[in-house]
Amino acid sequence: MTEKTIRIDPVTRLEGHGALTIKLGKDGKVKDVQFNVGSTRFFEKFLHGRPMEEAPRITPRICGICPEPHHLASTKAVEDAWDVTPPPAAIKLRRLLLEAKQLSSHAIHFYALAAPDFVFGPFADPAVRNIAAVLKHLPDVAVQAIKIMEYGQELCRDVGAKAVHPVTAIAGGMLNPLSEESRDNWLKAHEELMENVVKTVELAKTVVNMYMDVITKVAVTPTYYVGLTNEGVLDIYDGNLRIMDPDGKIVQDFPVQEYVKYFGEHIPSHSYATHIYYKPVGYPDGIWRANTLARCNVADKMATPIAQEALEEMRSVVGRPSHHTFAYHWARIIELVQAAEWIKTLLEDPEIVSTDIKLSDIERKAGNGVGCVEAPRGTCLHNYECDENGIITAANMVIATNHNIAGIEKSLMTAAKQIFEDKVHESLELPDPLVKT
Image (cartoon, rainbow, N blue to C red; front, side):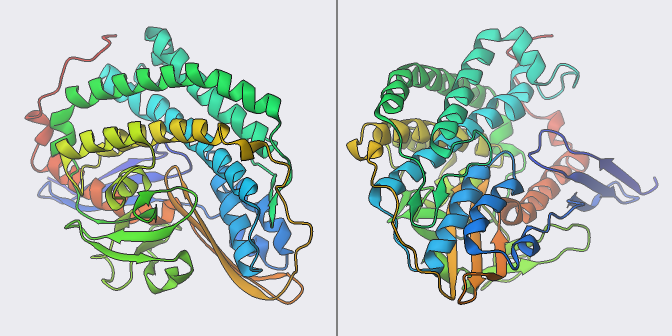
């Protein structure tokens, strides 16, 4: 047998650009697995020499899937550098914007990127194992997916002024208030939203139960985990960063401004995406993962009641911490539920329609600021330094891809060995697909 290289380029169902390389030795064993990111976007350099106020308008262009987290992390970094605290109503509007994005993004990911494999089966013809086939064969499911995504995206448009690349968060607050009419309309539509969310949970439970053998056996990969919590409660807008070790111990709980003490950065030769890891342990032992399952691992509990029930149910099956890579889909649905619940809570808060949403005067000064929120795929951190005129002199961004890519490679290595060496797929109990094509 000769050495063999398997190359998948591009990797589809991915929010970005990437390729997968698997190298097999002459003995058929896996020698290496690489997740290749072959481009860089240079946004840190784009910011040099720019006024701090421009950063929240520039950085959302980093990503078309999650521009809201970049917009808000950037704004928070500017405020941190200038010691600015926005009015409470502005913070609630920002939370509403972020939860709307969480809702929409998780729905897109579950229905468009994950569901086709589970609905039609992982060995179905790729020509039918896609979102177009879901639309054709399960039109009712497709409609509920579209309605959830539409609610989230249109709410982002209402609060952020644009459905993609929002512009309303500024240092010291928000540009536009939410009208009472809009608030009432979103509350009225929320009942149907929850109906579709409940149907999504039911579908997810069906899929989880059908594929439990896959979830509990394939790509189970112990790593460290990182995510935001607010006194132990999962919070995607504010709080401390928590780090959990592979045994489930919380080893750090620290303000985001201290991230340089704990974030290590490894530069691999095969990718432009750096690997972030737990610095006190070193690389590769300190590889961690962010994203939905990581947040559900590091958090003691969810912020809303129905999501908490769902978290407890998941933990009763896969434990805490869960190292089950496929359980990320399960955790994604739990966060989708929390986003829907949070949206209603925020909309019912009288202060959400307040016009007291921005400070009248901001003092520009030299400073160093860190802003951090949770993007749907993981922790999004921006760090800017500026001179006395408020001009950016240095910028560092640690985004979800950087947190996850080393963990992705580690879980891919685990899965590749299981498939090519252990032939695990031959012994898995795979169900009949929900839809036969």
